[in-house]
Length: 157
Image (cartoon, rainbow, N blue to C red):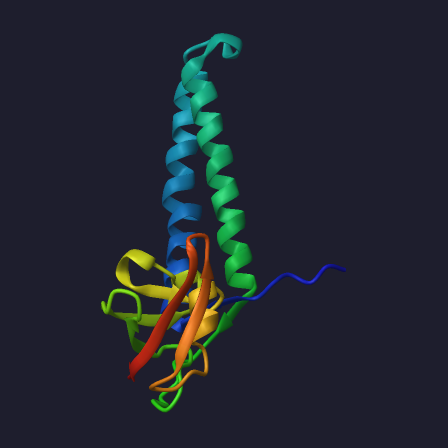
């Protein structure tokens, strides 16, 4: 039997997924069932664009439900570390780009909560892996398509 990969996430993210699943299985599923029922009433299903579209939406819905169920079933709850001596899950890390001197603050999160636009990076990403267990003053090198990027850890909170 193939073992499913665990999906790291916070308790809050797990609750969001459960809430979304409940909405999809109750409200959204009934909406789509109603669309299919209405489309059937239009007659010949072989040339019924409304019916085809509703069935496509139903397929997308069932796919999304299966995806969320998989995430929930294979969730691994991670608790933010409180240590500030080294980088771990939940750490907020201030780093300095050694090429241009820019300072950035990143939060280390599980892959299901990553949002680079909000400076939330996954511990599974190359940058996140490079930061894990580092200490203030450490210099890290991250392999990127544009070359090696160098950062220094300035602060951990």
